[in-house]
Picture 1 (cartoon, rainbow, N blue to C red):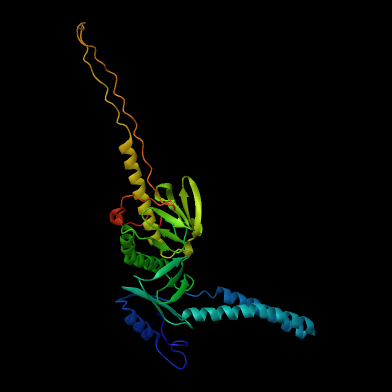
Picture 2 (cartoon, rainbow, N blue to C red):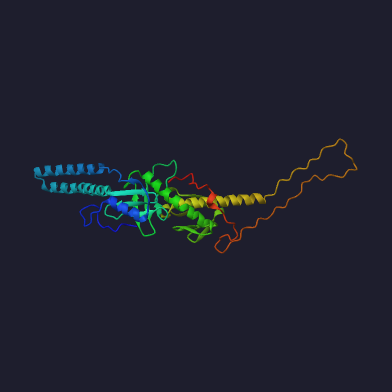
Length: 343
């Protein structure tokens, strides 16, 4: 949802509406609940602007000297060179002024985003999709935060850590709120046998699907998202899927995939253990000093246990298992975020 107010907020346009009032109206319309936190633009660094100004000033000084000594052609050439850093300083200063007119607000049940020249956009945690360009890993170097939000009503907003300060705080808060609101619904859908889609990737109880190919969970050993690309290890080989920035709500996808993978591995291990032959106990015969020749001969050879054949699960034409028992994912991993990832 975006506000219907056009033009810059609170600036000499036809409608002067305070930004705080627009945000309040959006929160009321979307029923976002109590306001929790506001993030303002990151402090703009003027080092670049000052450097360009110094260079432009130096060129202009040389141009003035050239005019003084009568070298008019040289003065013109140096003057034109001075325009380059001067224009760069002007554009950078204008960009910094636009960034100062931006605001990100978090509420109990959603968020609002405003950027200069745009409308206020509102999103609810239980319906919003968030795409993050790079997924940070624990113990990794500081990462860039770049998010793209979208809502079911067509609202969109893109922002990053160059626009709003304290990116680690708002990045974690947004990802955690969306995951907490939507993960239980996704788990219930999987348990009911439905297929849940995350862009080009889809999941169900039996497999992960990508580009019309199915990869059963028993074959998947690991799912990874380093270097901005979603990959998985299948039967010992790595397969690249899609850029992580194209996977909506990546943390929900990753949690569901990890639960399904772990549940399938545990089921396969249990079936393998149940079908392994038990180790025969060696027969113990107490030695006697003088065996009775009339006593029957004791056959101490262990009984032979036949190895049972494991029947592979029946599958349909798409490689999906048709007789796999339903998994209860609600307790598969204690509602935890995988340890190797952090929002």
